[in-house]
Length: 386
Ligand code: SF4
Image (cartoon, rainbow, N blue to C red; front, side, top):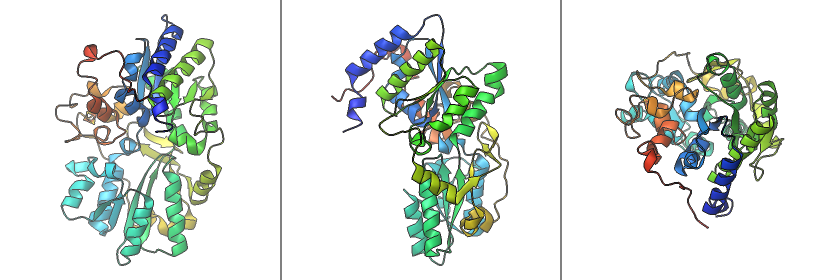
């Protein structure tokens, strides 16, 4: 398949591994944070860590949209169903994320609540069109990649005067979260998290471009390489980060040139700017309240904002006792540091969002099983499809 197969070739992976081994300075370490869950899964699926020298380490970041949503916002969604009798439309991953009191949207659905899994905002609009007597709320989550389709849905609903449709907006912003991590005490003062450089998100950057990362590359003196999601993308980007660090540079470079430009998708950016504005602060699981890190619907579209249409109170909720998702999302701990990992908590019985989501770090560790017997892993795990 074009743009996939050529980025999974074994011989090229071996050459890149050799180049990284040759260029990585054995006198220092390289701690490279992949912000995106997509990169985490590529690293685990293809065994990329096993191809790195011991001093090149991947640090997992908070870039999983399901994982970073605090439990209180899921409690809000459940309240919309139980107290306001809405049809709640949501992406599949959200259904199984544990909420307060061992509830989840899936359990609410099993108990008779009208929760429907959708694949797109257009599915949610269709449900609203087909149920004019019912209130339909789209539970919108995600980073900059999924925001434009939500903006399109809001404009469509406005144009059609679809008065029974609204959006519970939980869209969050990547650069603010990266800045929050770099300013965190663990990175700046205590030193429990070492980050030398970042793999920049690929899909997010196709919308916002590479330009927004330039500020903190300069300010915090950390190199950023926008990386695609295939194993050779990750390896090439690791090599580019290592070269920058060796040369004392901290620039934004773009490995994913087949999709990402410096400016990004202007049309999508204008669409988002027309419908959304910055929230003053938004709570992230693991990061706490992060200033200007999320979007809310502009007052021009107030009628389509579920938070203005219904009573949606701020809810402070705690994670399941023993769940280390907050520390994992900050890069402080690994999934295997959690006592519940693989015992109480599995994909069949998730205790936290990081085990539910297809982009979660715990799910990546569990699904590809590389924690089980690392010594027995063969040297090359990249699939050869050439
Ligand atoms: S293994 Fe489960 S309980 Fe532990 S951090 Fe991951 S999601 Fe939370």
